Image 1: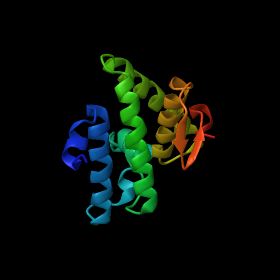
Image 2 (image 1 turned 90 degrees about the vertical axis):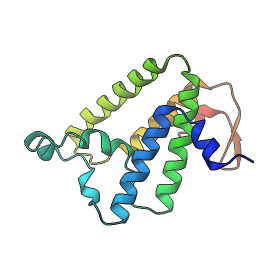
Image 3 (image 1 turned 135 degrees about the vertical axis):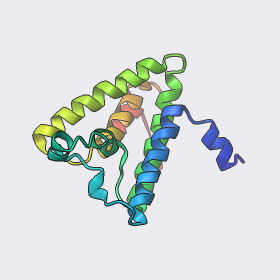
Image 4 (image 1 turned 120 degrees about the horizontal axis):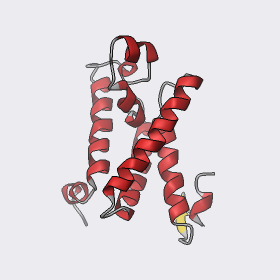
Length: 152
């Protein structure tokens, strides 16, 4: 049995810090220190008030503390860490993949007026993991299936 500390310490740096950011933002909203609207993409606030953090916080904010948040965060940490483990020694490639995909999603969000992209990032991570592990057979929600079918 692993302790929570050993599990946390074995996470990669990107997974670790994005999880801390996501949980921290959710705690701030839960404690009423900040409104959840503080994290969403609001293009007027970004361009006029230079609230540039909105470009990043919308990518890892999964909403208020509830069962949906726990499930989304669990999937996010699992697949983020699995992908990060596959990029050992090539962390710059992994960061560039994340930057490229998140930039494209943010550009699309501008035109479609999508305020939160965290679920899109989660699906992207899941899809990339599934495409890079096509030959594995995995159990997902109690069913054994090949990874390419999991996102659908």
